[in-house]
Image 1 (cartoon, rainbow, N blue to C red):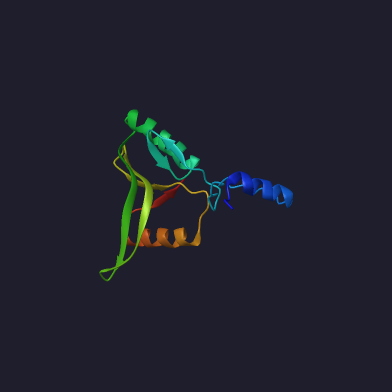
Image 2 (cartoon, rainbow, N blue to C red):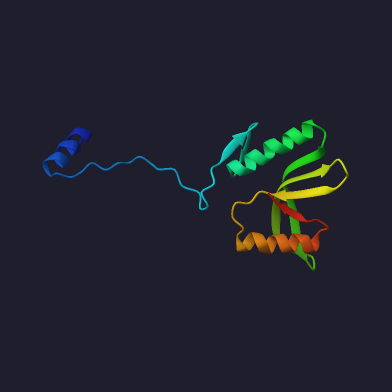
Length: 129
């Protein structure tokens, strides 16, 4: 006997087996953030994408310069690499002040720890937006 899709469908109908749905559902982000694309760049959340758009407008208005995204800060102690912190944005304002920004919806314990270590290691203050 040859088993075909039609045979399986008929068999399930005779045995009253409900057809299974095989539609994959997209995986939901742990904190509900939705990936968003702006200018060909994919951001982790809509809030981060909005902040990028605001910073681009400030850049075009020459209020800020040297805008950079996903800037790594290495945290080392006694020459041993402990971890890496990725800042969402860095830029210099028109007064020459260097800014490090992180767009946050949820302040996790890991983020809080990394923030303290970066601020203790580097001469920067992380601004949460």
